[in-house]
Image 1 (cartoon, rainbow, N blue to C red):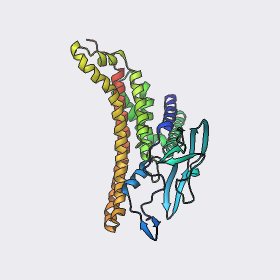
Image 2: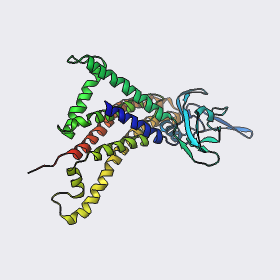
Image 3: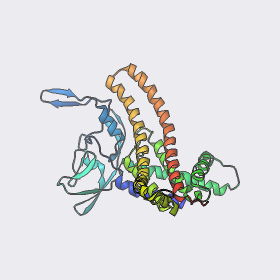
Image 4: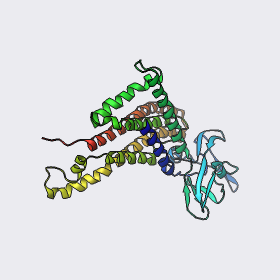
Length: 354
């Protein structure tokens, strides 16, 4: 449990610094159901629906948590902006960037939003550690994890030797499965107990955030490459800091291999050390982002063709894809955990003596 708490704390610090993606356009909250009009000279011109813009705005990070739009009313929660600029710390609400038309075009204390990033009007450097939509969603998911698993831990203490009950009975089969079929099978009987808390934390963290990302108005946390980067970096250090001499020996001086061949194989093995976390990062990011883009593409078809016939086809497909995404949410968490466990198992494996 202490390992899990430390992991969550380090993850939150890292993600606060890195989990901010750029917007394609931050001047307005885009609603595909509304046709905006622009007065130019003596006439008006209708803005065309831009599916690419709509999709990127839904999966990108932002300085407010937008839930829905009804007519010209936007339902959103402003988030705190925390920046260091010109030798001073500035803490204020993201609403400071809103003008009278609810667009992010206003300036505040020499700062403005430009393509979703806070920049200084005078061009000076800005160190931004704001609580963005992704960071706020991280806080929600970590709080949910703490509530769920402290409740389960309390239930285990109070019902020692008894059958699981309530939320404990829901999660116990999954916990036992990760422990016995993932940690024990891939790491080995001798070392699996040390790494089970970490693997359980990784699995449930990814799974919970994948599921939360499917809710309307939610954040695209695991579809943010900064989040998957931090997960991959933690996996990299957990694996290599626990590597035994046998593990490093197979990388730098593979037994039974001629010395002249090591000149070719050793660089390949060294590159492989770094390619493993990179593949973890890209796999999770790409799969989750692709799922969101497919769903948004199906919705965009309705507004592109403006046809009830297209809507009759797109809506059932969207529901079907959403159900597939529920399965993918679990599978991606499981695959990430399995791969990390195999990397750890290779690192802690003891040498074979004949």
